[in-house]
Length: 93
Image 1 (tube, rainbow, N blue to C red):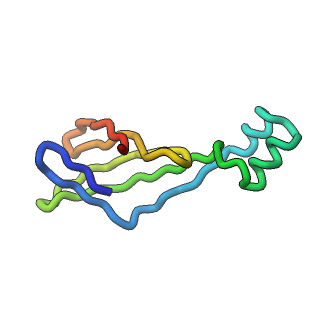
Image 2: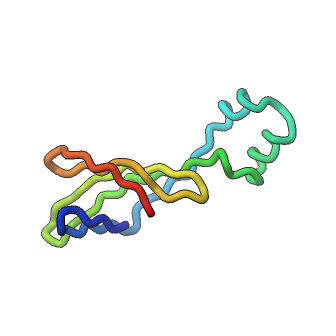
């Protein structure tokens, strides 16, 4: 991941990406049946959420911590926090 802020380039590599699905909530929402079965089997991916919490580092050693989430077919978005506490909203193109 690369983030350019005020002329500084922050990069992060090799961070974990988590895949999440709240099956109990989906079961309550859709009940038993074909739609829930497709979600449960992995055929319907519209109900999956991915997340990551990378730490990005600039050439001079400054770090930014990000919290990102997205659904399949969409890019990550979220917030990155600089060391001084300033938060920056991020969204992929």
